[in-house]
Image (cartoon, rainbow, N blue to C red; front, side, top):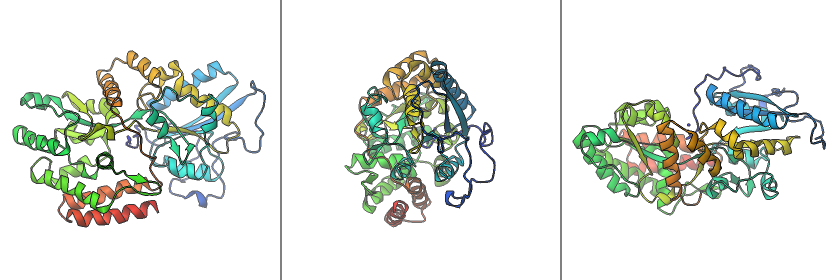
Length: 447
């Protein structure tokens, strides 16, 4: 998963893609499309008027990204809804993450968006600001969309400028994953939640000397690590319509990790570059090139598949209350859908029905409804998955308030951080020089 981070998909984009036309539109901007792609003649109602008959036949279109496993689980959960509401059927479309948002932009610009679509925090603000997503506040207030069993900060992470734009479908939080087997082999203490960044770096430097494996990856290019660190300094990644930090803040962050590299706590720049990849199979804690990696906590099961060593996971260094219940992704309703009431009911069912929860499992992250999460947890046999759920639940007791949903341009803010952090990692620029350049690039990204 974005993950999150944005979530990764395991299937090529072409598979399971039966209802979308292949017209080479992935790189064509929505504004250039003369004839909108049709996701289905009844996708969002066209000129039809919504029926007042509760038993009238309704076909809802729904679009999500993911691999074949997610597709199978989602289709099973939707079939449960149809079993309880025989008049409601679904036009289901899914594809891999790559190209998904290009396709979604094309569909929404043409007015042919699916009634329900999956979205993440890279794009939620952008879509909400254009009223592409339906404001779900009235449904929540009327009790038709229940978020009472969600962690408060998880629900709030779907609110943009006062509009309830997306329902979280999976909780995630930042996690520091470490190689427990490596530490036990060398009789070294494990890192602990609450240790300062400086204490963690000193721990990692000692681990490097004893194990001959770099103690930690260098997360100076990792936006989520920077974000948590900023919140611990009383700052944030965003504040209103602007950045929530200064170039001096980034300088301090880059200098912190330059010091860590100088102490031998991290690998070389080329290996650090490998760890900057989002591919979970390339995380240094599982490739044996570092003792710890900064990841999303719900990636533990996928990490475990790539190593025979036992892994542990704790909060990021510093005050854990800087972390929050983050939505790994959301489901939103198209703002112009003629079938909004039914679409909202479907989302409410998928989020809150125990049977649907057991079907969906943790593929999109930990279930947002805490009661459903317990039901899923009790039915899970995978030790890594149980560990992931337990850790997130434990960290949940320490969560602070959620930040605002990222601004439009967030994905560029992330990629520019990697670019300039690597300038420092490779020694091509000094921390202050790279920080100033990054700050200007980040400002331009959200302008």
